[in-house]
Amino acid sequence: MDLKQVEYIIKIAEENNITHAAEKLFITQSALNQQLLKLEKELGTPLFHRSRTNWRLTAAGEVYVRNGKELMRIKKNTYNQIRDIAEAQKGTLAIGLTTGRGITMFGAVYPAFHQRYPNITVEPVEKRVRELQAMIADDQLDIAFLTLTIEDRTRDVYIPLLDEEILLAIPSGHPLSAHASPPGEPYATMDLTRLRYEPFVLMDKISTMRSLAARIFEECGFRPNILFETKNNHTITTMIRANICCSLIPAYYVKNDSEGITCFSLPSRPSWQVAASYKKDGYLSDAAKYFIELGRAYWNS
Image 1 (cartoon, helix red, strand yellow):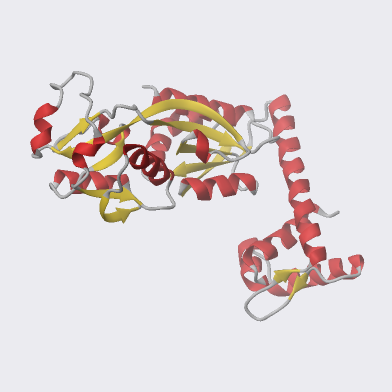
Image 2: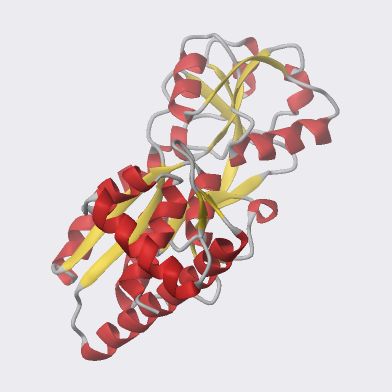
């Protein structure tokens, strides 16, 4: 199989459109169509159901793309292993990052990475956790840094970097703030049921933080009064500081700036992990390992 041809067919399948695929591949639509027709003639069967707006894989196309992706994975792993042996230190490293804190980590550790691997091009990708997991499974990322619980894991490999506590956060002007520990002391413990009639702002339903929050509320035996949902923890901390709501937030978001927010530990001490992930049976290059170690040092600093 011609791997360039394989790449072409996979791209058409991803875009569901030959015009868009040609644009992403930086070739003309005519040239891409000729490659497709040549391959279909060789195979003796069409690979796509064609329409003006949506190209769908035929049964034969699904087989071709599934095995084509495996070939591309083998090629990528082979090249990475040979580069490590040859110490060529060249190539591309696609890194998945969660929105918000992920890019902050990336900015902090990239200079050290670039100093050791100046000839490796890094491609940072910011997405939600579940989107990043899908990209790992589809060989679109070499590694990703994720925040999640054990229950949120897929079949891929996860390297724990940090266990992070989930805190109950309330406005500093709330009457229950009087029960907080003095600054510098460990967080006092607060039973979540004491806030059962308060408004909460939570992460939206497709976030890993929301699935963890749902389990916490279920264990406490009540459904929260949800004022609204958001995609960003920074929005939540802003609303708490504005004396609008309470919430459950990862400790990271008040670690260096807790002004206007009072935090408590919960009796069960819920937590999740910051973890690095890569595809099961995938090859972790020396460069990827080094980036993970930089991430570990950052999260534990």
